Image (cartoon, rainbow, N blue to C red; front, side):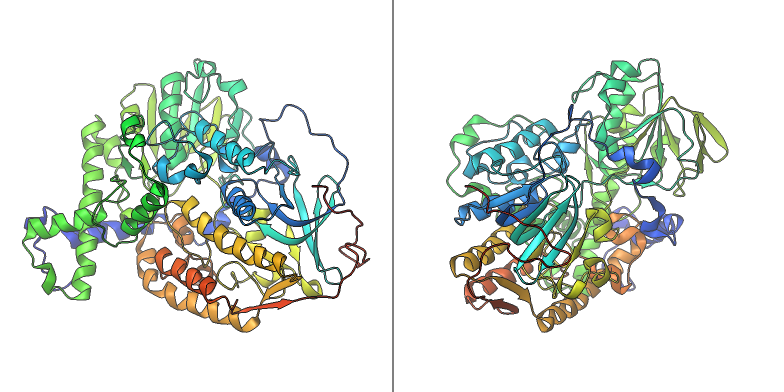
Length: 629
Protein backbone atom coordinates (compact mmCIF):
# COMPACT_ATOMS: atom_id res chain seq x y z
CA UNK A 1 0.00 0.00 0.00
CA UNK A 2 1.42 3.38 -0.97
CA UNK A 3 2.30 5.57 2.03
CA UNK A 4 2.17 2.61 4.42
CA UNK A 5 2.72 3.37 8.11
CA UNK A 6 4.31 -0.01 8.62
CA UNK A 7 8.09 -0.10 8.26
CA UNK A 8 9.36 -3.26 6.44
CA UNK A 9 12.50 -3.21 8.58
CA UNK A 10 10.44 -3.41 11.76
CA UNK A 11 8.16 -6.05 10.24
CA UNK A 12 11.06 -8.23 9.16
CA UNK A 13 9.71 -8.64 5.60
CA UNK A 14 8.76 -6.48 2.63
CA UNK A 15 4.95 -6.51 2.20
CA UNK A 16 5.10 -5.28 -1.40
CA UNK A 17 7.57 -7.99 -2.39
CA UNK A 18 5.40 -10.60 -0.69
CA UNK A 19 2.30 -9.37 -2.51
CA UNK A 20 4.15 -9.70 -5.82
CA UNK A 21 5.22 -13.24 -4.93
CA UNK A 22 1.64 -14.14 -4.02
CA UNK A 23 0.40 -12.87 -7.40
CA UNK A 24 3.14 -14.73 -9.29
CA UNK A 25 2.26 -18.00 -7.58
CA UNK A 26 -1.44 -17.41 -8.25
CA UNK A 27 -0.84 -16.73 -11.94
CA UNK A 28 1.04 -20.03 -12.35
CA UNK A 29 -2.06 -21.90 -11.29
CA UNK A 30 -4.85 -20.02 -13.04
CA UNK A 31 -6.68 -22.13 -15.62
CA UNK A 32 -9.43 -21.04 -17.99
CA UNK A 33 -11.39 -24.25 -17.37
CA UNK A 34 -11.58 -23.62 -13.58
CA UNK A 35 -13.95 -26.27 -12.12
CA UNK A 36 -14.38 -27.88 -15.53
CA UNK A 37 -10.85 -29.28 -15.21
CA UNK A 38 -12.17 -32.11 -13.04
CA UNK A 39 -13.40 -35.43 -14.38
CA UNK A 40 -16.89 -36.46 -13.37
CA UNK A 41 -16.97 -39.80 -11.56
CA UNK A 42 -19.37 -41.41 -14.03
CA UNK A 43 -19.14 -43.93 -16.86
CA UNK A 44 -15.72 -45.57 -16.83
CA UNK A 45 -14.90 -43.75 -13.57
CA UNK A 46 -18.12 -44.76 -11.80
CA UNK A 47 -16.32 -47.38 -9.68
CA UNK A 48 -14.70 -44.49 -7.79
CA UNK A 49 -18.08 -43.91 -6.09
CA UNK A 50 -18.81 -47.54 -5.25
CA UNK A 51 -19.43 -48.15 -1.55
CA UNK A 52 -16.62 -50.39 -0.20
CA UNK A 53 -18.17 -50.50 3.28
CA UNK A 54 -21.30 -52.49 2.39
CA UNK A 55 -20.92 -56.26 2.17
CA UNK A 56 -24.34 -57.10 0.82
CA UNK A 57 -27.02 -54.96 -0.88
CA UNK A 58 -29.99 -54.12 1.32
CA UNK A 59 -32.90 -55.93 -0.30
CA UNK A 60 -36.33 -54.36 0.14
CA UNK A 61 -39.52 -53.73 -1.78
CA UNK A 62 -40.09 -50.34 -3.47
CA UNK A 63 -41.73 -47.73 -1.26
CA UNK A 64 -44.83 -45.75 -2.29
CA UNK A 65 -45.88 -44.26 1.05
CA UNK A 66 -46.50 -40.68 2.14
CA UNK A 67 -44.71 -38.67 4.83
CA UNK A 68 -44.67 -35.17 6.25
CA UNK A 69 -40.93 -34.67 5.69
CA UNK A 70 -38.24 -36.35 3.63
CA UNK A 71 -34.63 -35.34 4.18
CA UNK A 72 -32.25 -36.32 1.38
CA UNK A 73 -28.85 -36.92 2.93
CA UNK A 74 -27.73 -38.48 6.21
CA UNK A 75 -24.67 -36.34 6.93
CA UNK A 76 -24.56 -33.63 9.57
CA UNK A 77 -26.80 -31.39 7.47
CA UNK A 78 -29.55 -33.98 7.22
CA UNK A 79 -29.06 -35.19 10.79
CA UNK A 80 -29.31 -31.69 12.23
CA UNK A 81 -32.34 -30.92 10.12
CA UNK A 82 -34.13 -34.08 11.24
CA UNK A 83 -33.04 -33.65 14.88
CA UNK A 84 -34.29 -30.05 15.03
CA UNK A 85 -37.59 -31.18 13.49
CA UNK A 86 -37.88 -33.85 16.19
CA UNK A 87 -37.23 -31.20 18.86
CA UNK A 88 -39.99 -29.10 17.30
CA UNK A 89 -42.42 -32.02 17.63
CA UNK A 90 -42.37 -33.34 14.05
CA UNK A 91 -42.60 -37.13 14.04
CA UNK A 92 -43.26 -38.17 10.44
CA UNK A 93 -39.71 -37.93 9.04
CA UNK A 94 -37.76 -40.07 6.61
CA UNK A 95 -34.05 -39.78 5.80
CA UNK A 96 -33.00 -41.06 2.37
CA UNK A 97 -29.27 -41.84 2.17
CA UNK A 98 -27.18 -43.38 -0.62
CA UNK A 99 -24.59 -44.80 1.80
CA UNK A 100 -25.01 -47.80 4.04
CA UNK A 101 -25.47 -45.74 7.20
CA UNK A 102 -25.70 -42.22 8.56
CA UNK A 103 -22.58 -40.05 8.72
CA UNK A 104 -22.18 -38.32 5.35
CA UNK A 105 -18.57 -37.26 4.86
CA UNK A 106 -17.58 -39.24 7.93
CA UNK A 107 -19.15 -42.39 6.53
CA UNK A 108 -16.94 -42.08 3.46
CA UNK A 109 -13.73 -40.70 4.98
CA UNK A 110 -12.16 -43.70 6.69
CA UNK A 111 -8.67 -43.27 5.28
CA UNK A 112 -5.69 -43.70 7.64
CA UNK A 113 -5.20 -40.62 9.78
CA UNK A 114 -8.63 -39.12 9.06
CA UNK A 115 -9.52 -36.59 11.74
CA UNK A 116 -11.26 -33.27 12.27
CA UNK A 117 -9.25 -30.04 11.91
CA UNK A 118 -11.78 -27.96 13.89
CA UNK A 119 -11.94 -28.49 17.64
CA UNK A 120 -14.22 -31.43 18.41
CA UNK A 121 -15.98 -29.63 21.29
CA UNK A 122 -17.47 -27.20 18.76
CA UNK A 123 -17.45 -29.39 15.63
CA UNK A 124 -19.49 -32.34 16.85
CA UNK A 125 -23.06 -31.01 16.97
CA UNK A 126 -25.57 -31.37 19.82
CA UNK A 127 -23.07 -32.74 22.34
CA UNK A 128 -25.10 -31.49 25.30
CA UNK A 129 -28.34 -32.83 23.86
CA UNK A 130 -26.86 -36.29 23.31
CA UNK A 131 -24.83 -36.21 26.53
CA UNK A 132 -21.38 -37.08 25.21
CA UNK A 133 -17.94 -35.48 25.32
CA UNK A 134 -15.24 -36.16 22.68
CA UNK A 135 -12.17 -38.08 23.79
CA UNK A 136 -9.70 -35.58 22.33
CA UNK A 137 -9.53 -31.91 21.37
CA UNK A 138 -9.52 -32.99 17.69
CA UNK A 139 -11.61 -36.09 17.10
CA UNK A 140 -10.56 -38.92 14.83
CA UNK A 141 -12.87 -40.01 12.04
CA UNK A 142 -14.18 -43.12 13.76
CA UNK A 143 -15.37 -41.09 16.76
CA UNK A 144 -17.09 -38.55 14.50
CA UNK A 145 -18.79 -41.36 12.57
CA UNK A 146 -19.94 -42.88 15.86
CA UNK A 147 -21.32 -39.52 16.97
CA UNK A 148 -23.33 -39.21 13.74
CA UNK A 149 -24.89 -42.61 14.40
CA UNK A 150 -25.53 -41.69 18.03
CA UNK A 151 -27.46 -38.65 16.83
CA UNK A 152 -29.55 -40.99 14.70
CA UNK A 153 -30.27 -43.24 17.67
CA UNK A 154 -30.88 -40.45 20.18
CA UNK A 155 -33.42 -38.67 17.98
CA UNK A 156 -34.94 -41.89 16.61
CA UNK A 157 -33.89 -41.03 13.06
CA UNK A 158 -33.27 -44.62 11.98
CA UNK A 159 -37.01 -45.12 12.13
CA UNK A 160 -38.22 -45.05 8.49
CA UNK A 161 -34.74 -44.16 7.19
CA UNK A 162 -33.69 -45.89 3.98
CA UNK A 163 -30.06 -46.57 3.03
CA UNK A 164 -28.23 -47.65 -0.12
CA UNK A 165 -30.86 -45.56 -1.88
CA UNK A 166 -29.95 -42.96 -4.49
CA UNK A 167 -32.49 -40.30 -5.43
CA UNK A 168 -32.84 -40.02 -9.20
CA UNK A 169 -35.44 -37.24 -9.47
CA UNK A 170 -37.94 -35.30 -7.37
CA UNK A 171 -41.14 -33.99 -8.96
CA UNK A 172 -43.73 -31.56 -7.60
CA UNK A 173 -47.31 -32.84 -7.79
CA UNK A 174 -49.36 -29.64 -7.89
CA UNK A 175 -52.76 -31.27 -7.36
CA UNK A 176 -51.72 -33.21 -4.28
CA UNK A 177 -49.29 -30.54 -2.98
CA UNK A 178 -46.66 -33.25 -2.59
CA UNK A 179 -43.12 -33.91 -3.73
CA UNK A 180 -42.67 -37.29 -5.37
CA UNK A 181 -39.23 -38.79 -4.73
CA UNK A 182 -37.98 -41.32 -7.28
CA UNK A 183 -34.94 -43.50 -6.54
CA UNK A 184 -32.75 -46.23 -7.98
CA UNK A 185 -34.77 -48.72 -5.90
CA UNK A 186 -37.94 -47.96 -7.89
CA UNK A 187 -39.32 -46.01 -4.93
CA UNK A 188 -42.06 -43.48 -5.55
CA UNK A 189 -42.27 -41.85 -2.13
CA UNK A 190 -44.43 -38.80 -1.48
CA UNK A 191 -43.84 -36.04 1.04
CA UNK A 192 -45.27 -32.67 2.03
CA UNK A 193 -41.88 -31.05 2.68
CA UNK A 194 -38.58 -31.93 1.07
CA UNK A 195 -35.09 -31.05 2.32
CA UNK A 196 -32.17 -31.39 -0.09
CA UNK A 197 -29.34 -31.90 2.41
CA UNK A 198 -26.99 -33.56 -0.07
CA UNK A 199 -23.95 -31.80 1.38
CA UNK A 200 -20.87 -30.54 -0.49
CA UNK A 201 -18.48 -33.31 0.59
CA UNK A 202 -19.66 -36.65 -0.69
CA UNK A 203 -18.93 -36.89 -4.43
CA UNK A 204 -15.26 -37.65 -5.18
CA UNK A 205 -13.41 -35.24 -7.43
CA UNK A 206 -10.89 -36.51 -9.98
CA UNK A 207 -8.32 -34.33 -11.76
CA UNK A 208 -8.59 -34.18 -15.55
CA UNK A 209 -5.07 -35.46 -16.12
CA UNK A 210 -4.47 -36.80 -19.64
CA UNK A 211 -4.25 -40.58 -19.54
CA UNK A 212 -6.03 -40.94 -16.21
CA UNK A 213 -8.16 -43.65 -17.82
CA UNK A 214 -5.11 -45.63 -19.03
CA UNK A 215 -3.53 -46.51 -15.67
CA UNK A 216 -3.51 -50.27 -15.17
CA UNK A 217 -2.19 -50.45 -11.62
CA UNK A 218 -4.33 -50.32 -8.50
CA UNK A 219 -6.10 -47.03 -7.88
CA UNK A 220 -8.74 -45.55 -5.61
CA UNK A 221 -9.94 -42.27 -4.10
CA UNK A 222 -9.21 -41.55 -0.44
CA UNK A 223 -12.94 -41.37 0.34
CA UNK A 224 -13.21 -45.02 -0.74
CA UNK A 225 -10.03 -46.29 0.93
CA UNK A 226 -9.17 -49.85 -0.07
CA UNK A 227 -7.86 -51.54 3.07
CA UNK A 228 -8.06 -54.92 1.33
CA UNK A 229 -5.13 -53.67 -0.78
CA UNK A 230 -3.21 -51.51 1.70
CA UNK A 231 -3.76 -53.52 4.86
CA UNK A 232 -3.88 -51.75 8.20
CA UNK A 233 -6.67 -49.56 9.52
CA UNK A 234 -7.49 -45.95 10.33
CA UNK A 235 -4.45 -45.78 12.65
CA UNK A 236 -2.04 -46.82 9.86
CA UNK A 237 0.20 -49.91 9.73
CA UNK A 238 -0.47 -50.33 6.00
CA UNK A 239 1.44 -53.60 5.70
CA UNK A 240 0.08 -54.34 2.23
CA UNK A 241 2.18 -51.49 0.80
CA UNK A 242 5.52 -52.84 2.00
CA UNK A 243 6.64 -53.89 -1.49
CA UNK A 244 4.71 -51.22 -3.40
CA UNK A 245 5.57 -47.94 -5.05
CA UNK A 246 2.69 -45.54 -4.34
CA UNK A 247 1.77 -42.22 -5.92
CA UNK A 248 -0.47 -39.73 -4.11
CA UNK A 249 -2.07 -36.96 -6.18
CA UNK A 250 -3.06 -33.97 -4.07
CA UNK A 251 -1.64 -32.11 -1.09
CA UNK A 252 -4.74 -30.75 0.65
CA UNK A 253 -6.18 -31.62 4.04
CA UNK A 254 -6.70 -35.31 3.21
CA UNK A 255 -3.18 -35.85 1.88
CA UNK A 256 -1.72 -34.11 4.93
CA UNK A 257 -3.30 -36.84 7.05
CA UNK A 258 -2.67 -39.76 4.66
CA UNK A 259 0.93 -39.14 3.57
CA UNK A 260 2.55 -39.91 6.96
CA UNK A 261 0.93 -43.36 7.05
CA UNK A 262 1.67 -44.26 3.43
CA UNK A 263 5.20 -42.90 3.78
CA UNK A 264 5.78 -45.04 6.85
CA UNK A 265 4.65 -48.24 5.11
CA UNK A 266 5.27 -48.14 1.34
CA UNK A 267 8.54 -49.10 -0.32
CA UNK A 268 8.44 -45.80 -2.22
CA UNK A 269 6.03 -42.88 -1.96
CA UNK A 270 5.71 -40.06 -4.50
CA UNK A 271 3.59 -37.06 -3.49
CA UNK A 272 2.51 -35.02 -6.53
CA UNK A 273 1.93 -31.40 -5.58
CA UNK A 274 0.34 -28.55 -7.51
CA UNK A 275 -0.11 -26.14 -4.58
CA UNK A 276 1.36 -26.57 -1.10
CA UNK A 277 -0.94 -26.32 1.90
CA UNK A 278 -0.36 -24.20 4.98
CA UNK A 279 0.53 -26.71 7.69
CA UNK A 280 -0.02 -25.88 11.33
CA UNK A 281 0.72 -28.16 14.24
CA UNK A 282 -2.45 -29.77 15.55
CA UNK A 283 -1.55 -29.80 19.27
CA UNK A 284 -4.04 -32.58 19.93
CA UNK A 285 -4.53 -33.80 23.47
CA UNK A 286 -6.92 -35.95 25.50
CA UNK A 287 -9.95 -34.26 27.00
CA UNK A 288 -9.30 -33.09 30.57
CA UNK A 289 -11.85 -34.66 32.99
CA UNK A 290 -11.52 -31.68 35.33
CA UNK A 291 -12.44 -29.32 32.49
CA UNK A 292 -15.49 -31.47 31.70
CA UNK A 293 -16.67 -31.44 35.32
CA UNK A 294 -16.52 -27.63 35.35
CA UNK A 295 -18.71 -27.19 32.27
CA UNK A 296 -22.01 -25.42 32.77
CA UNK A 297 -25.23 -25.81 30.72
CA UNK A 298 -25.00 -23.97 27.41
CA UNK A 299 -21.22 -24.36 27.25
CA UNK A 300 -21.12 -25.72 23.69
CA UNK A 301 -23.21 -22.95 22.13
CA UNK A 302 -21.14 -20.34 23.97
CA UNK A 303 -17.94 -21.95 22.73
CA UNK A 304 -19.21 -22.14 19.14
CA UNK A 305 -20.29 -18.50 19.23
CA UNK A 306 -16.92 -17.44 20.65
CA UNK A 307 -15.05 -19.29 17.90
CA UNK A 308 -17.25 -17.85 15.17
CA UNK A 309 -16.85 -14.33 16.55
CA UNK A 310 -13.06 -14.57 16.38
CA UNK A 311 -12.79 -16.18 12.94
CA UNK A 312 -15.19 -13.49 11.69
CA UNK A 313 -12.62 -10.83 12.59
CA UNK A 314 -14.33 -9.56 15.71
CA UNK A 315 -12.96 -9.43 19.24
CA UNK A 316 -13.89 -11.28 22.41
CA UNK A 317 -12.76 -10.99 26.02
CA UNK A 318 -11.49 -14.57 25.91
CA UNK A 319 -10.48 -17.02 23.18
CA UNK A 320 -12.10 -20.24 24.39
CA UNK A 321 -10.78 -22.45 21.59
CA UNK A 322 -7.36 -20.77 21.29
CA UNK A 323 -6.00 -22.51 18.20
CA UNK A 324 -4.56 -21.49 14.84
CA UNK A 325 -8.03 -20.71 13.50
CA UNK A 326 -8.65 -17.96 16.02
CA UNK A 327 -5.32 -16.19 16.46
CA UNK A 328 -5.32 -13.91 13.39
CA UNK A 329 -6.41 -11.00 15.60
CA UNK A 330 -3.48 -11.71 17.89
CA UNK A 331 -1.15 -11.46 14.89
CA UNK A 332 -2.60 -8.03 14.05
CA UNK A 333 -1.96 -6.97 17.64
CA UNK A 334 1.61 -8.21 17.29
CA UNK A 335 2.09 -5.99 14.23
CA UNK A 336 0.97 -2.99 16.30
CA UNK A 337 3.32 -3.94 19.12
CA UNK A 338 6.36 -4.54 16.90
CA UNK A 339 5.90 -1.43 14.75
CA UNK A 340 4.75 0.94 17.48
CA UNK A 341 1.84 2.29 15.42
CA UNK A 342 -1.11 3.97 17.19
CA UNK A 343 -4.02 1.82 15.98
CA UNK A 344 -6.61 4.36 17.13
CA UNK A 345 -5.35 6.82 14.51
CA UNK A 346 -5.56 4.42 11.56
CA UNK A 347 -7.86 4.97 8.59
CA UNK A 348 -10.08 2.10 7.34
CA UNK A 349 -7.55 1.34 4.58
CA UNK A 350 -4.72 1.25 7.11
CA UNK A 351 -6.73 -1.02 9.41
CA UNK A 352 -7.28 -3.33 6.44
CA UNK A 353 -3.54 -3.29 5.81
CA UNK A 354 -2.94 -4.04 9.48
CA UNK A 355 -4.94 -7.26 9.26
CA UNK A 356 -3.24 -8.14 5.98
CA UNK A 357 0.15 -7.72 7.64
CA UNK A 358 -0.97 -9.88 10.54
CA UNK A 359 -1.92 -12.49 7.95
CA UNK A 360 1.48 -12.15 6.28
CA UNK A 361 3.24 -12.55 9.62
CA UNK A 362 1.24 -15.69 10.37
CA UNK A 363 1.98 -17.21 6.96
CA UNK A 364 5.66 -16.28 7.33
CA UNK A 365 5.61 -18.36 10.50
CA UNK A 366 4.13 -21.25 8.52
CA UNK A 367 6.93 -21.02 5.95
CA UNK A 368 9.60 -20.72 8.64
CA UNK A 369 8.26 -23.90 10.27
CA UNK A 370 8.67 -25.78 6.97
CA UNK A 371 12.32 -24.74 6.82
CA UNK A 372 12.92 -25.98 10.35
CA UNK A 373 11.28 -29.38 9.88
CA UNK A 374 12.24 -30.39 6.31
CA UNK A 375 15.95 -31.09 5.95
CA UNK A 376 16.32 -30.85 2.16
CA UNK A 377 16.32 -27.13 1.20
CA UNK A 378 14.79 -27.70 -2.26
CA UNK A 379 11.95 -29.80 -0.86
CA UNK A 380 11.39 -27.33 1.95
CA UNK A 381 11.13 -24.41 -0.45
CA UNK A 382 8.60 -26.27 -2.61
CA UNK A 383 6.45 -26.97 0.46
CA UNK A 384 6.18 -23.30 1.44
CA UNK A 385 2.76 -21.75 0.69
CA UNK A 386 2.72 -18.29 -0.84
CA UNK A 387 -0.81 -16.96 -0.47
CA UNK A 388 -2.95 -15.39 2.25
CA UNK A 389 -4.18 -17.61 5.06
CA UNK A 390 -7.86 -17.70 4.11
CA UNK A 391 -7.24 -18.36 0.41
CA UNK A 392 -7.16 -22.10 1.13
CA UNK A 393 -8.37 -24.09 4.10
CA UNK A 394 -5.51 -24.39 6.63
CA UNK A 395 -4.25 -27.88 7.44
CA UNK A 396 -3.12 -29.34 10.75
CA UNK A 397 -0.82 -32.25 11.44
CA UNK A 398 2.22 -33.26 13.47
CA UNK A 399 3.93 -35.61 10.98
CA UNK A 400 3.26 -34.47 7.39
CA UNK A 401 6.32 -32.25 6.95
CA UNK A 402 8.63 -34.65 8.79
CA UNK A 403 7.59 -37.44 6.43
CA UNK A 404 9.52 -35.78 3.60
CA UNK A 405 12.73 -36.48 5.51
CA UNK A 406 12.22 -40.22 4.92
CA UNK A 407 14.50 -41.63 2.19
CA UNK A 408 11.53 -43.48 0.60
CA UNK A 409 9.33 -40.36 0.29
CA UNK A 410 9.75 -37.85 -2.55
CA UNK A 411 7.85 -34.64 -3.16
CA UNK A 412 7.25 -34.15 -6.88
CA UNK A 413 6.50 -30.45 -7.25
CA UNK A 414 4.72 -29.58 -10.49
CA UNK A 415 5.34 -25.84 -10.04
CA UNK A 416 1.65 -25.05 -10.12
CA UNK A 417 0.75 -26.68 -13.43
CA UNK A 418 -0.19 -30.14 -12.18
CA UNK A 419 0.77 -33.59 -13.45
CA UNK A 420 1.57 -33.75 -17.19
CA UNK A 421 -0.02 -37.14 -17.85
CA UNK A 422 -0.56 -40.66 -16.58
CA UNK A 423 0.51 -43.82 -18.41
CA UNK A 424 -0.46 -47.42 -17.81
CA UNK A 425 2.12 -47.72 -15.02
CA UNK A 426 3.53 -44.28 -14.21
CA UNK A 427 2.95 -40.58 -13.58
CA UNK A 428 4.79 -38.08 -15.79
CA UNK A 429 5.92 -34.65 -14.53
CA UNK A 430 8.28 -32.40 -16.53
CA UNK A 431 9.15 -35.35 -18.76
CA UNK A 432 10.25 -37.51 -15.80
CA UNK A 433 8.55 -40.86 -15.34
CA UNK A 434 7.60 -42.01 -11.85
CA UNK A 435 6.60 -45.71 -11.97
CA UNK A 436 3.91 -46.64 -9.43
CA UNK A 437 2.04 -49.80 -8.50
CA UNK A 438 -0.74 -47.89 -6.82
CA UNK A 439 -2.18 -44.43 -7.51
CA UNK A 440 -4.21 -42.75 -4.75
CA UNK A 441 -6.28 -39.66 -5.50
CA UNK A 442 -6.37 -37.37 -2.46
CA UNK A 443 -8.20 -34.76 -4.49
CA UNK A 444 -11.22 -34.07 -2.31
CA UNK A 445 -14.85 -33.68 -3.28
CA UNK A 446 -16.73 -31.68 -5.88
CA UNK A 447 -17.58 -28.27 -4.42
CA UNK A 448 -17.96 -25.65 -7.14
CA UNK A 449 -19.57 -27.74 -9.86
CA UNK A 450 -23.25 -27.31 -10.72
CA UNK A 451 -25.56 -28.20 -7.85
CA UNK A 452 -27.53 -30.90 -9.66
CA UNK A 453 -24.30 -32.49 -10.93
CA UNK A 454 -23.17 -32.88 -7.33
CA UNK A 455 -26.58 -34.04 -6.08
CA UNK A 456 -26.93 -36.39 -9.07
CA UNK A 457 -30.65 -35.71 -9.39
CA UNK A 458 -32.85 -32.87 -10.57
CA UNK A 459 -35.93 -31.27 -9.07
CA UNK A 460 -38.94 -30.59 -11.28
CA UNK A 461 -41.05 -27.78 -9.85
CA UNK A 462 -44.16 -25.96 -10.95
CA UNK A 463 -45.02 -26.07 -14.66
CA UNK A 464 -42.18 -28.51 -15.36
CA UNK A 465 -39.43 -26.03 -14.41
CA UNK A 466 -36.21 -27.86 -13.58
CA UNK A 467 -33.86 -26.67 -10.86
CA UNK A 468 -30.92 -27.30 -13.20
CA UNK A 469 -32.49 -24.86 -15.67
CA UNK A 470 -33.32 -22.20 -13.13
CA UNK A 471 -29.85 -22.36 -11.57
CA UNK A 472 -27.94 -22.75 -14.84
CA UNK A 473 -26.38 -19.29 -14.37
CA UNK A 474 -26.10 -19.40 -10.59
CA UNK A 475 -28.12 -19.89 -7.42
CA UNK A 476 -31.39 -17.95 -7.20
CA UNK A 477 -32.79 -18.18 -3.68
CA UNK A 478 -34.48 -16.38 -0.85
CA UNK A 479 -32.23 -16.53 2.24
CA UNK A 480 -30.31 -19.41 0.66
CA UNK A 481 -33.11 -21.96 1.26
CA UNK A 482 -36.15 -21.22 -0.90
CA UNK A 483 -36.47 -20.79 -4.66
CA UNK A 484 -39.56 -19.49 -6.43
CA UNK A 485 -41.38 -22.14 -8.44
CA UNK A 486 -40.35 -24.91 -6.02
CA UNK A 487 -42.82 -24.87 -3.11
CA UNK A 488 -42.10 -26.87 0.07
CA UNK A 489 -38.51 -27.45 -1.11
CA UNK A 490 -35.54 -26.38 1.01
CA UNK A 491 -31.94 -26.53 -0.16
CA UNK A 492 -29.23 -26.92 2.49
CA UNK A 493 -25.90 -25.46 1.33
CA UNK A 494 -23.55 -22.53 1.94
CA UNK A 495 -24.39 -20.54 -1.21
CA UNK A 496 -26.05 -17.24 -0.23
CA UNK A 497 -25.88 -18.36 3.41
CA UNK A 498 -23.64 -17.58 6.40
CA UNK A 499 -20.48 -19.65 6.01
CA UNK A 500 -18.12 -20.28 8.93
CA UNK A 501 -15.10 -22.64 9.13
CA UNK A 502 -17.03 -24.63 11.75
CA UNK A 503 -19.47 -25.97 9.17
CA UNK A 504 -21.81 -27.90 11.53
CA UNK A 505 -22.46 -24.63 13.41
CA UNK A 506 -23.68 -23.11 10.15
CA UNK A 507 -25.78 -26.21 9.39
CA UNK A 508 -27.39 -26.07 12.82
CA UNK A 509 -28.38 -22.44 12.31
CA UNK A 510 -30.07 -23.45 9.06
CA UNK A 511 -31.75 -26.44 10.71
CA UNK A 512 -33.19 -24.33 13.53
CA UNK A 513 -34.59 -21.85 11.02
CA UNK A 514 -36.19 -24.39 8.71
CA UNK A 515 -37.58 -26.49 11.57
CA UNK A 516 -39.31 -23.33 12.78
CA UNK A 517 -40.93 -22.87 9.35
CA UNK A 518 -42.06 -26.46 8.82
CA UNK A 519 -43.36 -26.96 12.37
CA UNK A 520 -45.42 -23.78 11.93
CA UNK A 521 -46.87 -25.13 8.67
CA UNK A 522 -47.75 -28.51 10.17
CA UNK A 523 -49.32 -27.00 13.30
CA UNK A 524 -51.40 -24.54 11.28
CA UNK A 525 -52.55 -26.75 8.41
CA UNK A 526 -50.52 -24.92 5.79
CA UNK A 527 -50.12 -27.04 2.67
CA UNK A 528 -47.61 -25.03 0.66
CA UNK A 529 -44.96 -22.44 1.36
CA UNK A 530 -42.98 -20.75 -1.38
CA UNK A 531 -40.69 -17.76 -1.85
CA UNK A 532 -42.21 -14.89 -3.77
CA UNK A 533 -40.39 -13.77 -6.90
CA UNK A 534 -39.92 -10.33 -5.35
CA UNK A 535 -38.30 -11.72 -2.20
CA UNK A 536 -36.01 -13.95 -4.23
CA UNK A 537 -34.96 -11.08 -6.51
CA UNK A 538 -34.26 -8.82 -3.54
CA UNK A 539 -32.15 -11.45 -1.76
CA UNK A 540 -30.17 -12.20 -4.91
CA UNK A 541 -29.41 -8.52 -5.38
CA UNK A 542 -28.36 -8.20 -1.75
CA UNK A 543 -26.06 -11.20 -2.13
CA UNK A 544 -24.49 -9.69 -5.25
CA UNK A 545 -23.95 -6.40 -3.45
CA UNK A 546 -22.50 -8.03 -0.33
CA UNK A 547 -20.17 -10.21 -2.42
CA UNK A 548 -18.32 -7.27 -3.92
CA UNK A 549 -16.04 -6.38 -0.94
CA UNK A 550 -14.62 -9.92 -0.84
CA UNK A 551 -14.08 -9.98 -4.60
CA UNK A 552 -10.61 -8.41 -4.61
CA UNK A 553 -9.43 -10.79 -1.89
CA UNK A 554 -10.67 -13.83 -3.81
CA UNK A 555 -9.24 -12.52 -7.07
CA UNK A 556 -5.76 -12.29 -5.53
CA UNK A 557 -5.94 -15.81 -4.09
CA UNK A 558 -4.32 -18.89 -5.51
CA UNK A 559 -6.99 -21.08 -7.17
CA UNK A 560 -8.92 -23.49 -4.98
CA UNK A 561 -12.46 -24.38 -4.03
CA UNK A 562 -12.70 -21.32 -1.78
CA UNK A 563 -12.57 -19.03 -4.83
CA UNK A 564 -14.17 -21.24 -7.46
CA UNK A 565 -10.74 -22.34 -8.77
CA UNK A 566 -9.85 -18.73 -9.56
CA UNK A 567 -12.99 -18.10 -11.60
CA UNK A 568 -14.17 -15.07 -9.65
CA UNK A 569 -16.13 -12.00 -10.60
CA UNK A 570 -18.67 -13.67 -12.87
CA UNK A 571 -22.33 -13.42 -11.88
CA UNK A 572 -22.50 -17.21 -11.53
CA UNK A 573 -19.48 -17.31 -9.22
CA UNK A 574 -20.80 -14.45 -7.09
CA UNK A 575 -24.21 -16.10 -6.77
CA UNK A 576 -22.52 -19.32 -5.62
CA UNK A 577 -20.69 -17.49 -2.83
CA UNK A 578 -21.65 -17.42 0.82
CA UNK A 579 -23.50 -14.35 2.09
CA UNK A 580 -20.91 -11.58 1.90
CA UNK A 581 -22.04 -9.88 5.10
CA UNK A 582 -20.67 -12.81 7.08
CA UNK A 583 -22.16 -15.53 9.25
CA UNK A 584 -22.96 -13.31 12.23
CA UNK A 585 -24.92 -10.78 10.17
CA UNK A 586 -26.70 -13.56 8.26
CA UNK A 587 -27.79 -15.37 11.41
CA UNK A 588 -29.10 -12.11 12.87
CA UNK A 589 -31.19 -11.63 9.72
CA UNK A 590 -32.72 -15.08 10.16
CA UNK A 591 -33.33 -14.55 13.88
CA UNK A 592 -35.05 -11.21 13.32
CA UNK A 593 -37.14 -12.75 10.54
CA UNK A 594 -38.33 -15.54 12.85
CA UNK A 595 -39.05 -13.19 15.74
CA UNK A 596 -41.23 -11.00 13.52
CA UNK A 597 -43.63 -13.91 13.07
CA UNK A 598 -44.69 -12.53 9.71
CA UNK A 599 -42.95 -15.00 7.36
CA UNK A 600 -42.11 -12.10 5.08
CA UNK A 601 -41.13 -13.14 1.56
CA UNK A 602 -43.01 -16.43 1.67
CA UNK A 603 -46.45 -17.24 0.32
CA UNK A 604 -48.45 -19.75 2.37
CA UNK A 605 -51.55 -21.51 1.10
CA UNK A 606 -54.14 -23.82 2.63
CA UNK A 607 -56.16 -26.22 0.52
CA UNK A 608 -59.50 -27.89 1.06
CA UNK A 609 -59.44 -31.23 2.83
CA UNK A 610 -58.80 -34.11 0.43
CA UNK A 611 -57.63 -37.73 0.52
CA UNK A 612 -53.88 -37.99 0.66
CA UNK A 613 -51.89 -39.00 -2.43
CA UNK A 614 -54.98 -39.66 -4.53
CA UNK A 615 -54.06 -37.69 -7.63
CA UNK A 616 -52.73 -38.97 -10.92
CA UNK A 617 -50.58 -36.17 -12.27
CA UNK A 618 -48.35 -37.00 -15.23
CA UNK A 619 -44.80 -36.89 -13.84
CA UNK A 620 -45.42 -37.38 -10.13
CA UNK A 621 -47.87 -40.26 -10.32
CA UNK A 622 -47.64 -42.96 -7.66
CA UNK A 623 -50.04 -44.21 -5.07
CA UNK A 624 -49.22 -44.59 -1.40
CA UNK A 625 -50.15 -44.87 2.22
CA UNK A 626 -49.12 -42.68 5.10
CA UNK A 627 -46.03 -43.94 6.95
CA UNK A 628 -47.11 -46.06 9.91
CA UNK A 629 -45.78 -44.41 13.06
